[in-house]
Length: 86
Image (cartoon, rainbow, N blue to C red; front, side, top):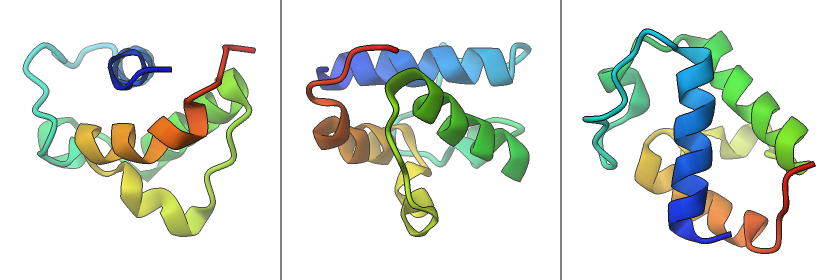
């Protein structure tokens, strides 16, 4: 998957988790929690959706890499380079 494809996957997950949020102005370098009303359960939902969709395991110690869109895409790029949805 390309970085742009991963970004679109994350946007899709965010739109399901927070359907009332406007994601059109989401800034890549600003933490999700500063731009959206996400709590820790919402964050875990993102991780679980990635696991369910792509069977990717994200260790708890790596959750900090998923704070912004840019860091999420950067972290997931090598993990999802050959991924196809389940």
